[in-house]
Image (tube, rainbow, N blue to C red; front, side, top):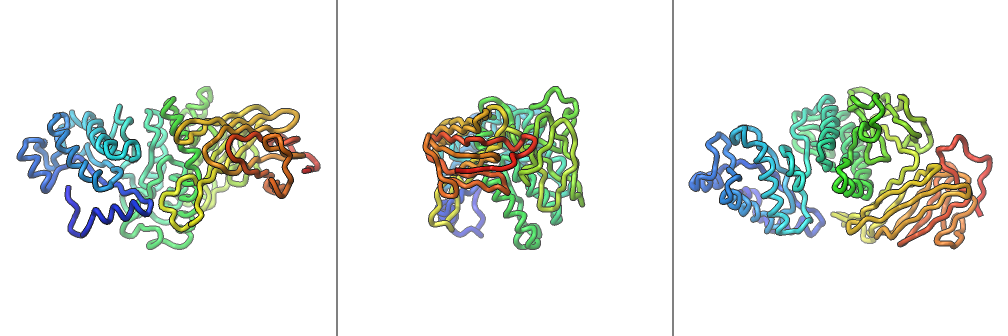
Amino acid sequence: MDFDVSFPDPTKMIRDLNARGMNLLLWIANRCSNQLFQEGSAKGYLFPFAWPAADVRRPETYNWFKEELNKYGRLGIKGYKIDRGEENEMPDSLVNQNAILFPKLAAEGLRDAYGDDFLMFTRNTNDTARKYTAVWNGDTRSTFGGLAASVKNALRSGMIDFPMWGSDTGGYIRVPDKELFARWLEFSAFSPMMEVLLGPKRTIWDDYDDELVAIAKTYVTAHHDLIPYTESLMHEAVRSGMPVMRSLVLAYPQDERVYELWDEYLYGSDLLVAPITEAGATKRDVYLPAGRWMDYNDKRSVHSGGSTIGTAAPLRTIPLFVREGAIIPRGDIIKLNNNWDSRWAPKLRLEIFPSATTSRFAYDTGKDVRTITVSTDSRGITIKLEDLGTDGTVDVYCFGVRAVTRNGVFLRPNSDFNYDPKARKLSVTFSGATNLSLQGATSLFVASPPAKEMLH
């Protein structure tokens, strides 16, 4: 439980990282060695195994190990990655119980120090431990088979109510090649937790080429930009049990074609993600369930559901589709270690893909839930925003816009709002509670655009 001598001043190091907006987590396990082994053995707290775990079923052992961990919390450590627990550290009959008690004692210590401002994720956990910890999928092989298995692991974890999930991007066992690393980065961007495993011969900016660095930048940025969406989905998962990464059978239980579909999934209700899990693939077939779907990468091609389509997937691209009526909150709302932007301020960007009916999204502000409502009728498209706690921009994918009002005031084109006819996107800012009316606007999911669009 001690820092190695190669860390001359751990307290100063942790304090410096925190000051720069980075929160340090430690890798831990219920295994006792060195001083912890000596003390635990003397007290009779340990199982008599080669890598002995503490018997945390006993209150005195539980409190002893918890206090040892709490020393890190007092130094400024704000989370743990918990490993092991099923590798002959204890009797097999106690593994499941330990997989609840150990995350519990670790979380209690962090909560004493930081309230709810901490993060834990655990490889071996079950049952009520979901109250304390997220999950990562363990030591996956660095192969395309390992990537395919990770997609299945994510969906299965969601099915048993572990919605906060991530993987070792690139796999763990051996060094991933460039193509595999790229495909795994794409997949991890559309996971609630994006952990990129670095190390000897597998550090992206040292051991790979500029193309992989660019791919990493693209998908790390995408993951960060989706935080408003993902955070709201996590809030929904806590309330209802509906996972963030959803097997299609949860949304389309009557569709027999999705019963054994493990290589694509819904990210929330509005995005369909189809990872590339085969080496050398530059395209793949994607099954689109009922409804109408737009290619989220080009935001132009519209497809009817209930069929399988072929889609291009060059190395830099993961196939993505957005559902008709989707509302996707995105944006840069958490500063973290962004110390390079002296003018940084949080900002939201709401992507809206109107349908012919009414859509709603429950947006989690971090304090409460506010509603985004989009409705369409013969007069156009109406967007109602409750105060979302952060100002930003609404991007509405539509055509036929004749005029725009915000809170009843007509706006001037190319000044108060912009419409890009090539992208078929109208952009307008909002602040606080806002009502927008896009007169004459029509959903992109209709058969064809009007012959002429006018804005005045």
